[in-house]
Image (cartoon, rainbow, N blue to C red; front, side):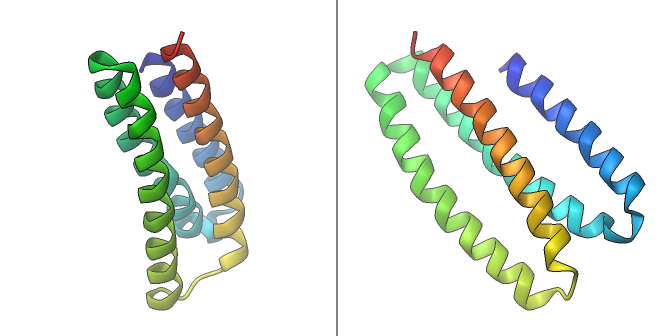
Length: 115
């Protein structure tokens, strides 16, 4: 969990730098950051809880988390695009970068758990 916390701190720093360089896109950058962060924190909480109980439960938790995250991302992005008018390119760039970075970090942590 400590590694994930450090990854979150790095992502906050990257978000701050990006928002400093592009202040006109601060809201889009924030939404692109917060969606993967909320999903990642929730996933790591449940995966770490499952790892304390049973190894098979970790696999089930990861599979269920994947399905829930895909629904979550789809619904939230749809709502954001319908209810809030903003610059979609900066949002998608921010979202894609943080999505890839935080999910790669999750994969490393899950690999460490499974040893």
